Length: 128
Image (cartoon, rainbow, N blue to C red; front, side):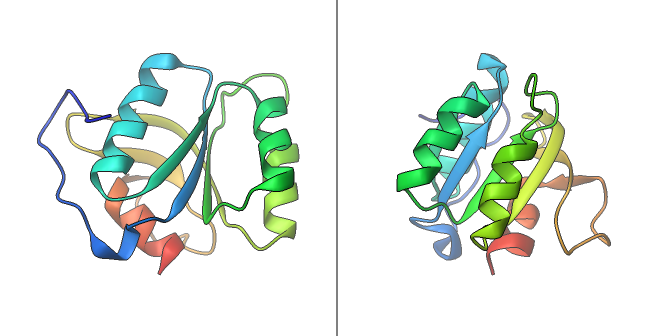
């Protein structure tokens, strides 16, 4: 699925076939983030609810979890805990500017990144 807004992002070989679990209940946000992540070369497994993501994560492996901090009842805490226990970094976010490709997030182990960071830089900080 390609992003329908903003400039297209060039694929980056460092992110090819990297599996990103994406959790957000917002269908617009999920579609925009999926499109942008796929443009960068990632394989995206999107979820609208934490329970479905937890079930998937029991049998599958992700390289990164991106969790909408407004994702509902559990806010992704159980999912992040399970994945981090398995060594998978989890990024909590609360917004995405599709036009500029900026994610409002606090990436793990990288507190120096600005709060609004290009999605490609978040991926680089977490996956390389």
